[in-house]
Structures are given as structure tokens and as C-alpha cells.
Image 1 (cartoon, rainbow, N blue to C red):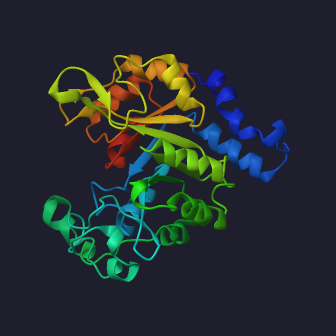
Image 2: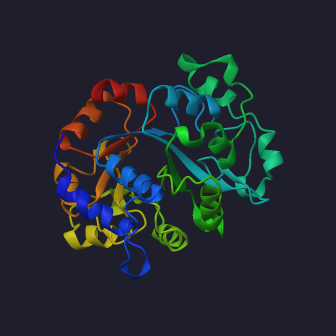
Amino acid sequence: MRSNQSRFSRLSLPFALLGGGALLLPLSAQADALQQQLDDLQDFQVIAHRGASGHAPEQTLPALELAQEMGVDYLELDIQMTADGELVAFHDVTVDRATDGEGELKDLTLEELKALDAGSWFNEAYPAFADDAYAGVEVLTLGEVIEHFGNDARYYLETKSPELYPGIEEAMVEELEAHGLIEDGLVVIQSFSQESLLAVRELNDQVPLVQLVWYYPEDDGEQLVEWTGVTPGPQEISDADFQAIRDYAVGIGTNLTYEDELQVIDAGFVEQAQANDLLVHVYTINEQDDMQMLLDWGVDGIFTDFPDRLNALVE
């Protein structure tokens, strides 16, 4: 394991200060918990992408429970909002792929969403992992996930398509604060939207934030660009670009490949980001050869649908 001591001291700084530069009391339980989280983030993190979603229907209780049994560091969830303002764990903006329903999630009430079968599709799509118990499982609210796992889990939450859900950041922070998860050092919030992350920071500046990026070739050429423009492409990215993210986030979450064929980052990208005090978490890696390559590069965490495969390499 590479040494992160110099990065640790700088990484902890924004979260050790309150307004006016006053230090949190060193014996405060809250400060201890938040510092412990930042400390733990210096070690390699196994991040269960939508739970153990290679084995069970994504973001449902079976997938999340299985991930916990595998001993992951974080349960990763996409958070959206129903028509009646309830926060739910769901990836797509439509329900067509991962339930037996159809239409946009934002147009459905929680009651309508709960009536859908969120598991049978998995059995049909992945017969090798099918289980009759998955048929009929429900979409979960964020509150249900928290109530089920409580302080026994850490949560890596994404504000998914926040432009569709005005106020989602405030609703999420309120939910997390109500359960004491932020002060207990149990939450990371990620987003492709810089605006959304900055909104979270305004609401509670103790939450570690991760800026998601997605690199792809522009017009099918060789030049890579970033989906939202939050950074230039990896060939052009500078220390200043990484430092701009470091101003509000502790890490960057990036893809390794485009369409599973074109590699978009390399070891140099990882080294440069880390040299600018950013953690590097890479998504979504399911083959052990790729996992091992990233481990050799010294990345700080990997999102995977198969935590068991990753655990076999890091344990």
C-alpha cells in the first residue's frame, strides 16, 4: 500500500475547520467520526455498485444485503425523487429496464413505484444468477435502506439527474442528518453535476464529495472530452483542473473505458490526480484483470457489481 500520509493531512483540512477558521473540538465525537472516515478513505475502498448487482437485482434489498455480507466498504446508490417527493434508490430515469412498469420515475408516486416488480427482469436478463426470491422485490426508499442497515454500513450516494428534481439535495441532506449519518462519518455524496455537489456543500460542508466524470471520444475521433465539461479530456487535463475540483471535493470518480473498448485514463492520470490531493475511484470494473491493473496503478477505490471478485484480490 502506497503511503498517503502527506495527502492525508491536506485532505482532512477542509473538514477540520468551521466558519471563521475555528477548529472543531479535538475530543468531539463528531470530529472523531468525520476524521475517521477521511482516515479510512486513505485505504483502498471496495464500493458495491448498486449493491452486489452482478448477483442480484440492483439497488434492491437482496443486492444490498449480499454486498454487506461480502464485507464491502460502501453501498453505492443512485438517488432520485418520486412525483410525491419521496427519495428512492433507482438508477434509470425511466422504470422500463429494471421493473415491469414503464414511464419516467419522476411521474410516479411512491405507491405506484412500490407496486412494480423490481426483480423479475434480473432473472430473465441473468439466468445464471436467477433466484425465485428476486421476483416481486420492491424499489427501496432511501429511508428504508438507512433504517435497514443503520450505522452498520457506509453509503456512497449519487444525486442522479438532479436537474429533474429541484430540491433533491436539501431533501437528501435532511434525511441523512435526521439519521445522524453525516456526523457519524458514514456518507459520501457523488454526482456528475458540479452544481449539485456545490449545493450539498452549502447545506452541510462536512460531507465528503466526489466529482464524477465520464470521458469519451468526441465525434468518434481520438480527442477525448468530458461529458459535462467539468474538466478537459485526460490528454489536456492540468494540475489546475484537478485543483479546481479539490476546492470542493475529496475525490474524482472516473470511467476506465468507453464502451468497454477504448481506455480513457492511464496510470499517469491517477498519479496526477493524487498529486493534487484527490482520491481516485474508478467505475464500474467487473473483470479481475482490469481490477488488478487498477490496483497496480494505486487507485483509491473501485466500483464493482461483483465485490466478491474484487475482495479476492485485495484481502
